[in-house]
Length: 92
Image: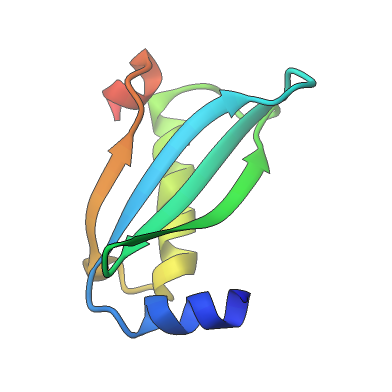
């Protein structure tokens, strides 16, 4: 399935990123990243981020690294970034 999703993402000239931070049932901080492509949302990854500072700068770095991975270094393909409304995400 992952290979199929990667093929779809690679075939698109533009991608939208959706980033959300939440806590799991154990109280760990989790960063969820999804990609919107051709009208469909694909969950990319959920990562435990408990050791990362909860700042806008740290979140931007995480998003940039995920975007580089998803676009294979072609950040010009990112057409939008959406986040939730917590104060850290809004500061992005």
